[in-house]
Image (cartoon, rainbow, N blue to C red; front, side, top):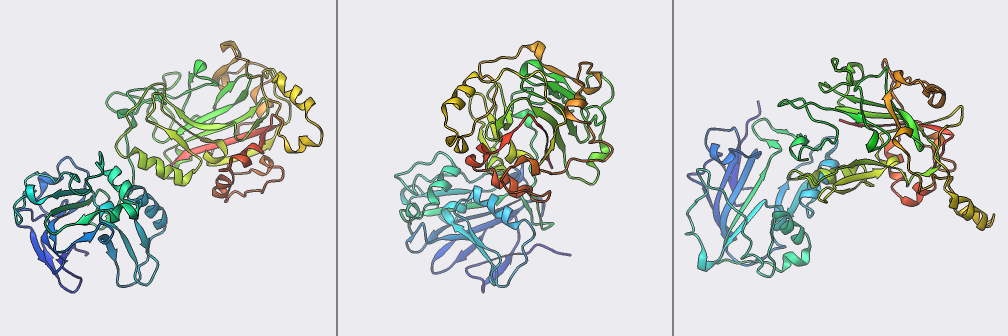
Length: 499
């Protein structure tokens, strides 16, 4: 059975074991370069430091208070880990390091060499830095941070020319070597540092990188998709071709998806949500869709089978969310966004505006894209843009090879509510029936949508079913998207899902 042992010393050859959570009697270290006190806190190791961990998500903390015995520049001192022998990093380590770089942009690492290491300048890696000058310093040797008294950030005596309003601002500033070299660690100052984290449980030696956020706390009760089934709130999913014609959809109803139609687009929409307990259109018990979620880590999926009634470039079509009112993102939301950018680099976001939004080109955001040939023309399309023909007539035949001309809808045309439909597929009575326009809805009873983008391209490469990441990377470039045309002659199947 693995047990935690903490050893402290002035170098790796002079390490001595210390007890964790020993706030009352911190350990003193002294070398020719530095002297000071250190306390290591580990949540759950013993009852000590219970006040420190109260109301915090931290799992551990290392805090130091001391003095340098000679001057060093801010670029001389680093914090991190160095191993004596090779290690075997787990799968996905590179993603973990990329996320760490979002928090500490100056982190450097090589975990695959003979002596693996990861190091960062002390000014960037520390969660909290506090500096006491000679004229206003605590008595060296005292340790006031106990019984719930916490260290607070105070860099006013570190770099007097720059005032930092947040820890992130300090880290971002000192990621530049020139800025670090402007700082001098002085022997007559007392320096207090603290490094902590919420992810590593040293009692079990487990790392948790899961993100669990109850978004209903942060969007000011806006009906973005509904609400969760806790504290009397229930999720309601509404679907429509526009915000003016939304109707409650039946979640997890694979036999009967939701049909939408407008002068611009027609299609079937299915929303799957694991363990759904929300509102249904008819008030009956919600469906579980258990077969789809079996042996998967997915929490929800949105699948669309549809046809555009005009031509659009792949740069015209975006997928995402937009809020009607300002929301309050949780602390660290920007980190989650940066992580999302690792998966979808084309994602664009402004969650701090008066009407927050996040959008990505549809060919970058979709997990699955499947294109098939339609068997008959679409009906009920909006009028074509009258300027398109004028432009086409003015362009020479030779020039048309380098100019993209689309049979797009008239931008001044506005559909009426009567022209838009949003209803369960089995309740549609209009002709032609949806299956004649879209084909049969076959994604039920265990049959799932698979990537097939052959008809998406003309001269572009064909991305196989196992090359979704390559397809996303390919369409990150706007020029590439502008040369890919969505045509009314095809049926487009999309699926976006979240684990």
